[in-house]
Image 1 (cartoon, rainbow, N blue to C red):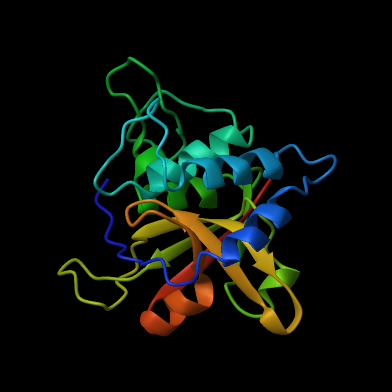
Image 2 (spheres, rainbow, N blue to C red):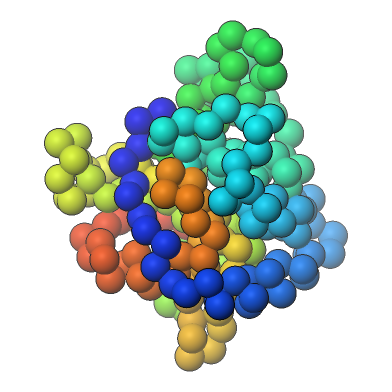
Length: 201
C-alpha cells in the first residue's frame, strides 16, 4: 500500500466547470461506463466514500473504486496474486494488493489486456486519452529521492481532456485529494518522473 506521490492541486477551481461539463458525455456501447467512473471520481475525490477504508496512501484504492463504479468485475481470491483484483466487504484480507498498491495494479493491468491497454503519456493527449482512463507515476526511489526507480508510486484518474492548443489532461486522485490537477503542472513540478497511461476497456 506504500505509495509516495505528493501531487498538489495546481489549477484554479474555475477549471472544474469544464471538467463537470465534459464528464457528462458517456461512450455509447462501451463495456466500461466512462460516465459512471468519471462521475464517481468527481463525487469522491474531495469527499471520500465512507463505504471504503481510507488509507494514508489512498490513490490506488481510490482508482480501484473508480474502476468498480465504471463496471469492472472483481476477480480472484489470492490477495497477493497479480491476477486478482478485489475488495471484499467484511472479509480478511479485505482487498488484494492490486486493489490498493500502484505497482501491483500496474502488474494486473499489464497481465489483463482484455481490461486495459497501455498508452504513452505524450502529446497529443487528446488523441489517446478519454475520461475514466488512468495515469500512473514513478516519482521516487526507495529512499524517497526524486529519481524514478522502476516502481509505480501513484495512480490518478482522467476526468477531463483538453483538446487542440490547450492539449492537457485534468486528473483526479487521492492521497493529496484533488479533482482539478493538470498533467502539465505535474510534469513541470516533477520533470524526472516516469509515466504510463492506461486506456480502460
